[in-house]
Amino acid sequence: MKNAGIVLASLIAFVLWSDGSFAQTLPEPPDPASIAARTVVPQAGGYVGSERCRSCHKPEFTEFGKTHHATLPERKGSVTGCEMCHGAGQAHTDAEQAAHGDDAKSAAGAKLIFSFHGKAKENSARCLQ
Image 1 (tube, rainbow, N blue to C red):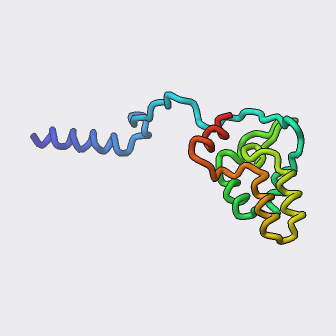
Image 2: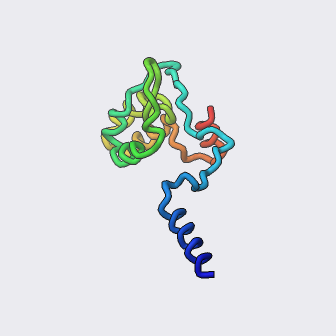
Image 3: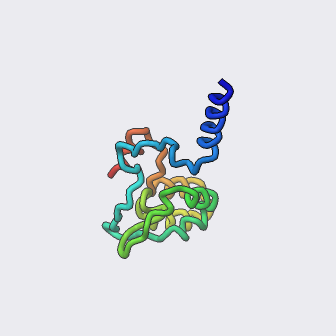
């Protein structure tokens, strides 16, 4: 019986100190990753680039940089960054700049870009297009 205890202890020690080759692995997910590197080609212009967005939305820009969306590869002629999801920002940024602090004009300018404040179905449809 004493030898059985030594064998069992040795086996446990071997498993604990092994290189992990006996460890279980997670199965592959049945669905691909939710973030796909799909090229978004500008349709009608009006894209200003994320740097212009950052000038007014620095906290949002910083948080976006921490997401998987920010690491999607850039391709020639494609849209990346903020405008990839929100759409072309030129009308929005021009209106906000022209508002010069006027709250009513600023509110009108805010409506010129998709802001994801709609219903869940609308927001999801925007992402899935």
